[in-house]
Length: 313
Image (cartoon, rainbow, N blue to C red; front, side, top):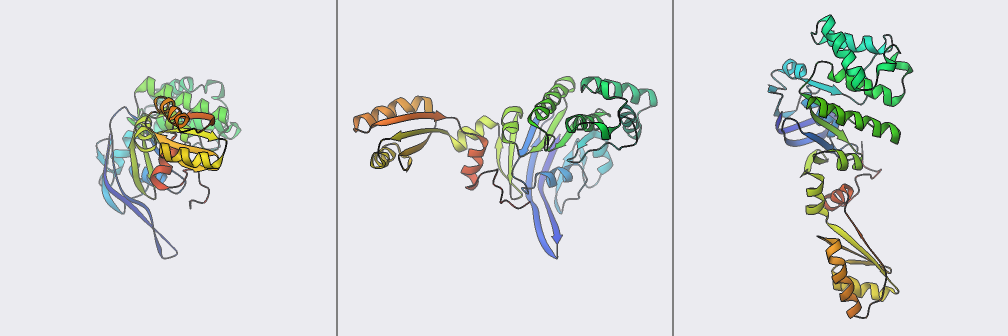
């Protein structure tokens, strides 16, 4: 569905070159749900805008839904849906009329557009809102309308740029429920950007981590966590000297009376580690294990958290 090689995008800001994307290679198979994960300013949205023909690449090539983004942008646009970060609907027409008009713009007949609008209103629980003006809807309701507008022409591929940003936790969960329902109903290929770690971890079949305009990791969430972060064991001791000795035995790091170790399988490694500490006369006061997060993966790759506030946008 997507085949991109060497995609770059350079902006000019006050006569200075800003390299937003620095050589992206990406393949996405049909029917997959792929999350592009990274901090603000990593290049996620710029990559999406190049793949959807909204921005021309500075260099590189990309074929989307069988059409070249540079040579045949109209062919790409006819076969994809795109839900940007800003709301898509206008303010002067009712919800159902917005959907019908969008369908007509894609070449659907009047009856066909109306039938498709009614289908999406039902699937996205928008039927009670069909006669409302978009400006009267809540944030979560407007995002569902945005998704409906992106799906009106039955695209093979739907791009979602930060679909749940700015929503409260309940609305975010609601949006994801509808996204997964749509995928089950239509088998649509979904490519989305997010900086919410739990969304990428729990929902995506594949996670592509982007930082500083480059892909730095690509795989399932479990593969990335197992291969790049590993499980963690954390123990505390009664004295700092014992913590330093315990760190030496396990190959971990001591901070005060706390020792942290990275291991392949914490549940299996913890009993042996505790026995080794007991045999060395080290008294352990607490012990716990933890599975890694995608933030641990990003930390292992870059030395910083994906949620750091000082990353330039």
